[in-house]
Length: 69
Image (cartoon, rainbow, N blue to C red; front, side, top):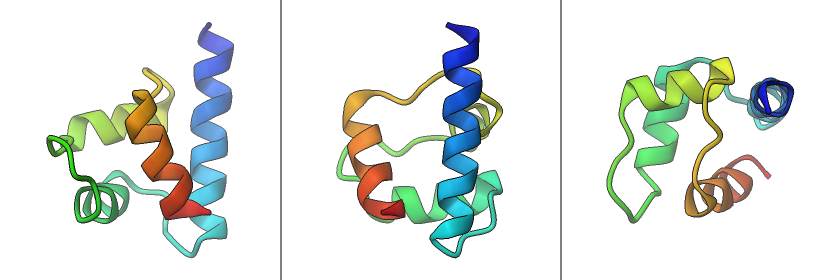
């Protein structure tokens, strides 16, 4: 499971770069929360996504896919 989370964080950072975003938590936080209809995510949550600690929930993954192409 740890390998899966680490692989996700690497793909997330790469997708951010490919979409023209700097792979930093504050950048993703602002872009994500401005489009997300659910409860806003915290800086800590986004930071953990980029470090490979948790994988976002399904609804959050869908928005990340749309946001980053």
